[in-house]
Image 1 (tube, rainbow, N blue to C red):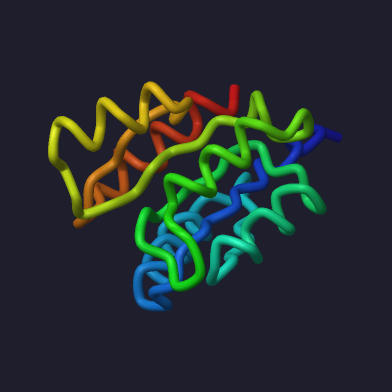
Image 2 (cartoon, rainbow, N blue to C red; image 1 turned 30 degrees about the horizontal axis):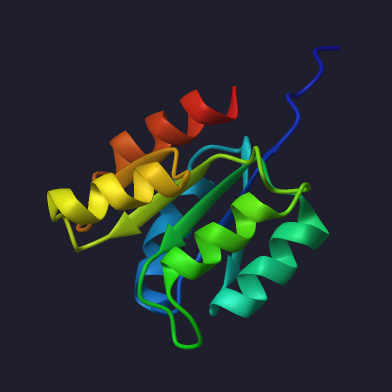
Length: 127
């Protein structure tokens, strides 16, 4: 009997429920993904430490702290330092992208999301 692949746990730190549902629907098409949604930076940091996701999707505009601050805390913690973080935002300014990549973001995805590109990127960085 073939062994099913280990699920890829994806944490999406996003306060907009519509965006979270869109990503959830896109990922449920592929049985290899397990999505956890956190609606604030603090909840996202707690979920990252508790669930140890394979990939983190991070919105920049959160109700309790900036996505940049979340990224800095993820990179400072030994448990999440090496976890790929994909920044997901509508702010596509080159200066923002450069700053976040310098702070340790793995990739930068702009909204509206190209869902096929998102799945491809998650698959690449989770490997």
